[in-house]
Length: 365
Image (tube, rainbow, N blue to C red; front, top):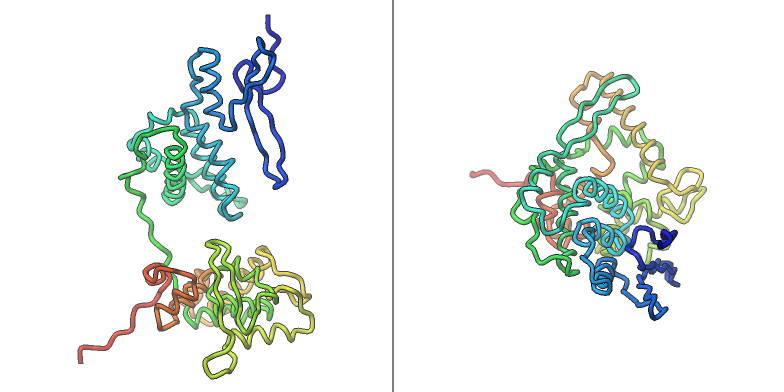
């Protein structure tokens, strides 16, 4: 009677897993078949599904059921594709993948139909939860989360087709997504000034930096003094990796508002490498930004309420730091210039998603 395997217990008999760490830091995984008659290892490759198929040929046994399930595709996608994405995308993809695994992990690849995709879309729910004050938040349809998860599933399935796991049409094709209402909040000057005036100097500079550069909050927090090159602020966007050179001098040779801001930051009594720092010269983190911005927004809303301006207070409470980017796009008259500043190759994206005020038009007469 054969002794039970103590390693590679998740693999069939006589299949061995070898794992090595490469110089690049990535883990290499290979599979081998132990041929007892010849007392040697037969390489099965680095792909688990192909290794199982080769094992089945050597053993003259049926291919294991798991070889045709989504679990193998999810595993390979998580191992090979996700690590090459931006860090924030990696984190969100892994959460989305965990939700997809809970439903599709053991499903045969060729058995998934558009109906299954539609059922997932319609039945995806949030979890009911209870807040600290005892308030119960009931479960509800997670329409946006379902869209994001199915977008990832579609990408995973396309990879499965590329890798040869299936020749079937992507089941997501033709399945409508849940309707999404894009955010259309516009931080006008009244809202912007109300919050900025209640902010400490370091947050005021950060708000100005985000607005004048038109960049995402994460990119603004990463800006350093080394990014100021030849009278331009060089930005490498974290999401798209696109590089943008934002001029610090205008056509007449004078300093732009952004150039003046950077000059002011350089003259701080205590400065650091990063443009976004605290008054002590420490780099501003996402958490520090959130705490300072929420405090300034709450103060501004309270002041507006005390002054009897409930409408302004309500708009201030809707304001988020990320609204600085749409504000920049909305207040640049030339759509092409707005698209260039935001790093969009398609002006339609800038127009539809980021322009939050209507086009200026002349009357009939």
